Length: 247
Ligand SMILES: [Zn+2]
Image 1 (tube, helix red, strand yellow):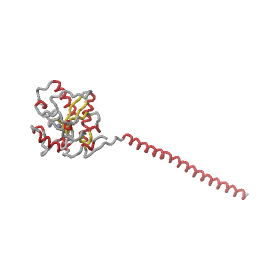
Image 2 (spheres, rainbow, N blue to C red):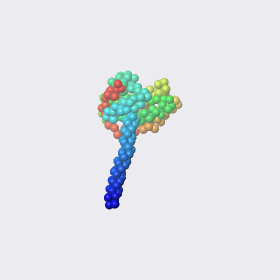
Image 3 (spheres, rainbow, N blue to C red):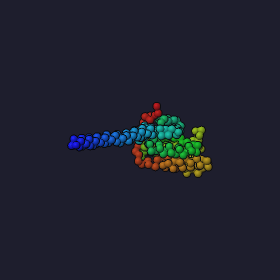
Image 4 (cartoon, helix red, strand yellow):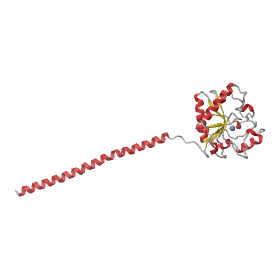
């Protein structure tokens, strides 16, 4: 009988041991299950990174805070008059055809152009950044110094990259009627000219409206000239527009 009791005790003890061993196995399986969501999170993080790469804007060339305006908005019309003889000096003053501006100013120009495009028009740029070397030639050539900023004093906001000379063109690229030709240094170019036609006044008012709406101020003597409202932030810079030429 004692032998039977002993056998029974050994049986019970073995059962407890087996039970503990099963319990450990279950725990391991549970841990494996826990690890699955962690792997999913890793995949999610990879996806997030990939999406960020896709939506990243293409980088544009910047030198000293300057950009090629066509890199900001390639629907703008560029017609640099100082790269031609069609300006008040009658000679070619620029050895480049690329219009560069401060990035902030270029972004404002894009917004003004966006507004005009909704009306079937586009902005045409006659001048943007102007090297000081050219400003000095203009100063020498100008018969009426009231129209040219003295490069030996404060200089021109064009040389700071935050001024533009602009007009509006229609969907065929034809310039809208304005009070005078570009670079006509006379009373006809003035906003105070009382002799302009109603069409010229209407077109000038439209140009003024879109430019001032997007952060530009105007001057009275030249209808085509606008300064970035933040012009005082910028100093006169020496930048080579040829370095921005599209390849
Ligand atoms: Zn100007």
